Length: 83
Image 1 (tube, rainbow, N blue to C red):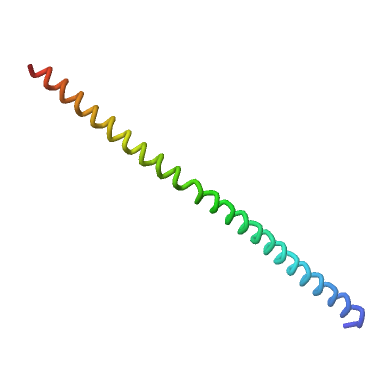
Image 2: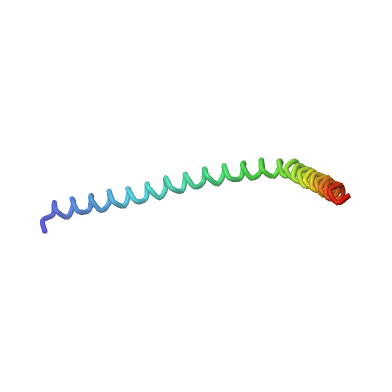
């Protein structure tokens, strides 16, 4: 192998290594940005938890009241049909 062939081969290897390192660096930056966004989103979601919890309990009580009223109306209708 000639001396210039070795240099070309060395340049190709160096270019490939730099490409791989650059891709890894870019991926690390993307992951870092994603992590920062996830932390911000988690903090925002944690602030909304009490509101969501109270809304869920309100919906549950509403469904319980509607179910109770429905049972009473069905019982009245069945009792009225029997009479």
